[in-house]
Length: 434
Ligand code: NMX
Ligand code: MLT
Image (cartoon, rainbow, N blue to C red):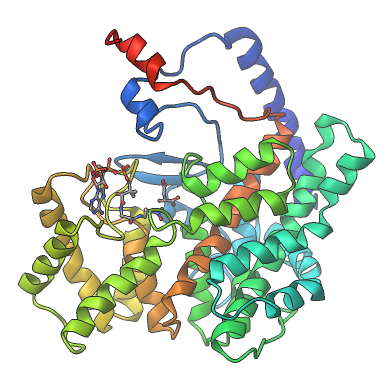
């Protein structure tokens, strides 16, 4: 049976001529134009990035390698006795675009198990950090510290051909991805469980081992698998994917690049919103001495937040114009496993009330919930009440998508990313007002 790396290389060889042809024969064909509003407004909607890993349709939501979330979950081999697929099989799928067989999946599981041991100095570095450091800062630092292991940097320094760069990028990415669950679980148990790490179980798959190292019983293993897959990628323009690719375009290795992506994810308008949702909801419950608010009370709280100039966390999106299907996928899980959970009932009520309030407020282009509106509820239910930790879970999932992206970036020889900036004077000249 060919290894994932061999299957990937075959795919790379198939794709390379497509890029060469597009560049050579059609390089001057216009994909898009840029307006002043777009230049000032965060490059919203400008088609200027390329990725085959996932695509985000505003009306439909994300597709991973052409498959919707439901199709992805249905197609991939499942962990025996579990309702969700192996994360390792999903990695195979994102990298190659091919749904792996069970044997191919198990081959990756085995490969990842061998790559799993985290160098001891990473844990020592984490232990030396102040315990009240945000877990995202800890994660980012741990990943950068592990840069010492980078094969890409070593081989680049030894001098290697541009066409081969994808190979050590693949090795670094697999090593990093295989080790991230142990690092994330270590941070959790260091910060919140009195430094009581649980060693990895070498027999388990990535999701199962993560649940085991967190010390949380099933079905949390399925929560982990679902969560990591759902958060993996959201086409390429989102802050964490774009940052990781941008940094990697300077031929920085996977450790430096992903650490930068983690830093981007830690912003409250991006991944940190899942922590903010819980903080916001808890804020309301505290005011009511733990009581679930009525719809009217919730609407008044939404207005209070908006009128004080803050955003409603977990609502709105830069691209989506409907309820995020990742929100719906998590809702399905909640309906099945925790329909009576207090927080879940509140999130459901919020889903009923918030879109109308946001529409009436009239600013947000998309009044519907995004992935972050739901994810903290599930974590809280399974005992992770330290909501500042939630974005770390998002980051472990996001690693799958961004690392797949940077392997392909090197495989297809994409160059240094370097867009052009203009001055306000220049824009006023173009507008004819100066
Ligand atoms: N609550 C209040 N105002 C909002 C919201 C919201 N949830 N969403 C958008 N707006 C405002 C936005 O701040 C902007 O105001 P202004 O004109 O004063 O600058 C206006 O509506 C237009 O923004 P949009 O074009 O609809 O959204 P944009 O693409 O600029 O931003 C987000 C997208 C996701 C940053 C924005 O919807 C937001 O801040 N949402 C809350 C935070 C959040 O949930 N982020 C997580 C996104 C998903 N993720 O994981 O990354
Ligand atoms: C993401 O998953 O990255 C977020 O939904 C943000 C985005 O797509 O812009």
